[in-house]
Length: 288
Image (cartoon, rainbow, N blue to C red; front, side, top):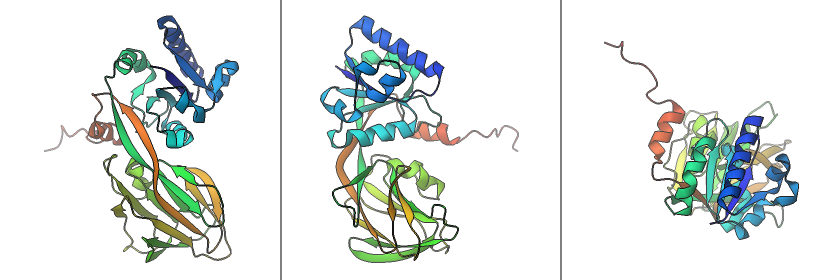
C-alpha cells in the first residue's frame, strides 16, 4: 500500500510529529508521496506533488489538520474518490478519525485492510453566467449577506418548482456530512453522515415559520438572489466560490464525486457527537 501525505503544519509540535512519522515510514520501507504545500513546509520541496495528482500515486491519503484541511483535500481529489484518513491536528475534528499520536499504531491496520470506508455524497453547483466551472463541496454551499447590513431575499426552487422566498441573512444547502457544521449552528438537524439527503436551512430568517427542510439527495435545488443593488457571496465549505448579482441563479445538485472517509472499527458516530458536542458533560450528581 502506498500512502499520500497531505495537510497543514500549524506549529512546531505538529511538524516534529510528521517528521517522526516520515522517518518511521523510511525505516519500515513504506512507500509514500507528499503533497507539494506540505512538502515545502517540511523543507522537502523537491518531493512534492499536487493533491489532485494523488489519485494516481497513492492508495490512501493521510490528511493532517482539522476538518477544514480535510474538506479542502477532498475537493482537490474531486472525482478520483481516493480514500482519505483524517489525522486530527486541529480543534473540533468531526471528520478527522485519529490524532497524530495514534497514527503509527494504526499503520499496520491500514496495510492489512483492518478499516472500512464510509462513502458520503458531495455537492456541485453551477452559477448562471459562469461558464465551464462547476464548484464542489463536501459540507455545504451557502449564500450569506456578507458585509451587507440588511437582510436579503433568496428564492428557493426544488425540482424546478418554486417553493419559497426567504427573507433572511442567507441560506445553506448541506449534505448529511455538513449537518454538523454551519447548518447545525443555524438550527438545522443532525443527520447520520451516510444518509443520501440534502438539508436546506435558512440563516436567521425574518419569519418564525421558516424551518429547515430535508429533501431527497437526487433533487435539484435552484437559488436566486432577489435583493436589488447588491452582490453577495456564494460559499463552498466556507470559502468564497463566486459573487452573485441580483437575479443570478445557482443550481445545486448531488455530485458524481464521492467523499470516501477511512474509519477504524472502533469509530462510532454517536460517540463522536457526544464528545464533540459535550453531551452528558454536565455533572448531575447533586440533583435531587
